[in-house]
Every structure is written in structure tokens, then in C-alpha cells.
Image (cartoon, rainbow, N blue to C red; front, side):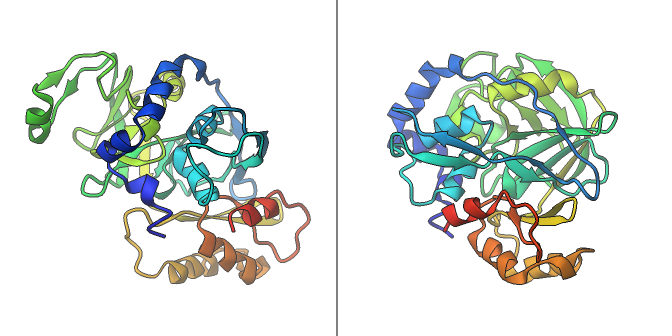
Length: 320
């Protein structure tokens, strides 16, 4: 598990030292990364798995980080699925599965939901019964992203960064003006938890990693989409749920993620208790369920006793 979490937990300074050429290459080619709104229909409780996996041939010179970003994923999502693949030199031409599908997190308000262990934000639009989802970077160990129910209090474009007192000596300033070095990027949505916010980033390679001082980092192309849609006052639930259970009609899926903040003493026991509390627990193949729990690869896995349609079997095999 520690080996698998290396890229999630590695400090930003170490990453810069180890991989400066990849980061510079990404910054030089950032204009190629664009995004459009992708809305998925949902319905509680019988349609709570959204999207579908994508098959893709690795092009020349692409890293797994490039591939993740093109498909709207954080680095953790491809890293967990392909723990043995060279992240910076994946095999040219290899056909890989891209995990562009997700089990929805539990929500009380169906507005904004951040699930910390999966490093992903969901934006529910109840009027149309659709949901959008985007990868995020979250707080590093010692700077954990806060949990709870909050609301959006302020929105700013081209924000200045008011540098925390503990970091002012490092950056040599108390306020960093807008610009390419500003870690907030071009858009900032503050929420009612003090100085925290959902914002862009000057370092897109940090999306899908534990790198911030508690704030939520989005790819620049995603915060540009999300920012105008979210009104001030929107509820924001920040939850910690590494094990999610969902349904597509009669089929039951589980999606398991690493316990990134090490909050759960016995992960398997926690997962089994989650299953026992599920209304359709009797319809679950426990052997397949426990296999997905062991893998913790972040991919929705069909764990139904009777499988009528399955998009996840090959994805699970790839993670073994």
C-alpha cells in the first residue's frame, strides 16, 4: 500500500527534483488541454454509477499524467489502476483501459460533494437530475482538507493569494498577485471553513495528489467550467468515504480507494460493515467484493451474485 501511495503522498519539492523535464513539458504544452461540460444522468437509489470505461492506445511521448488529464482524471486514478506501469514512459502503442466511470458518493444536499479519498469533486444539478465530476488535488498530510458541510461564500477571478504567515518567509511576500506563479490559478471559490477554497492551479501535475495546504485544486480547464455554474450559497459537503457502493438497475458495484489519511484501523472490516448496511447486501458476491477491497484501485467493480451486464471485469483484471 505504501508503494502504491508514493505518487499521492510525495512532497511537491521532491517531485520537482525527480521529474523537472515532465513538468516543464506540461507547462509548455498546456494550451492543448481543453474540456467541455460532461453531464451524466443519475437517480437515487437505482442509477448511481455514471460514465463508462474508455479504451485507448498510448501515443508516442505521452506520460500517464498526460493521458489522465486528457480524459478528465487525476493522476491517482491511472496510478492506482496501473501500479506496475512506468508512469513517465508508458509502452508506446499499448491499449489501456481508462477508468472514466464512477460510483456516486453519498450526499444529503445533492449540490457540491468532495470525496477526499478518491480526490474527486461532484456537482449535482437536481433540476435536470444530472451530475458533473472533476478530479482534484487535496491537502497533504499535516495540512489535511477539512471535512464537514459548508457553503460557498465568495467567488473571485484572477485572485490574489494571501500567503499564510508560516509561508511568508519562504515566498518572500504576504500577498502574491495574480499571475502564472500564483497557486490559486485564475478562479477561486472560497467556502465557509476559514481560508480554504476550491480553485485552479499553476501546477496541474498536482491534481490527483496530496499536495496542497488543505485547499482543493482543479485543472485550469475544469475550474473554468465549474466556476460560472456554482452560485454563492451552494452547499459543499466534504466527506471521507473510501468505499462506495452503487447500482445500475439490479447490478451492484463497489469502488474502493486507499485510506489516504490513514483514518481507518481495519479497512476490510470497515468495508464489510458498509456492505452489511447496504439494502441489497444479500445480492452481492462476497468473494468478488473482497477482491475489489484488496485491490483498492478506484475502479467500479460489479459484485452482483447474478451478473447481467458487466463493464468492470476486465478493469479489475488489469489492476491485479
